Image (cartoon, rainbow over the protein chains, first blue to last red):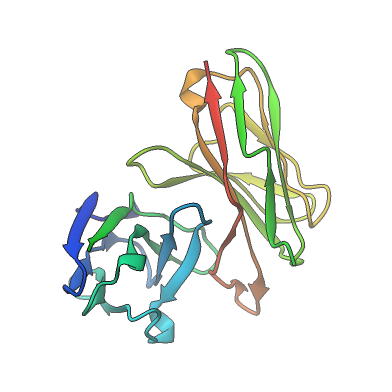
Length: 108
Length: 116
């Protein structure tokens, strides 16, 4: 069965500290991996996708197929990064499976 | 462009009542989805549609119905509301490419439904 785990429900870090949001998946095929983010009072939106290999708002994510992980990282967290983050694997022709989400709180 | 628009934003229902959550998108996307978000549970897919006239069940379809008469609109109907349907509902859409669904979802703002 397709499954996504995000082990931390809540992650609190201080401003300027590194942050890593973990995502592990159990998925058939070779999914593409996405991170979605929901800031306070805003709608869910795409943060980044692994196929793009880009850094968005200072965040990067490396797909480790051996460990089936897609952890989201940022070297220096900012207060505006506080939000709910969802990992979502996706196979073309199928539907997304969303992880349970991690709430990131960046403290001043 | 407005993107994906959902109405209402909030609603309180009594057990056994019915209602329709409206969703419309102006991006000419073929794919549309309804998700529910329960605390600590992530998003669960209720129904989806790959184009006008075509709908299919997702992971948690029981107690819901959908229709897709136009590309733009994808209403979600709750019949005989139950407390278990208390949740936040999100409508989303995505466009297609040569490979089908491109994978990027565009979400509405959400509709918070409480069933008492």
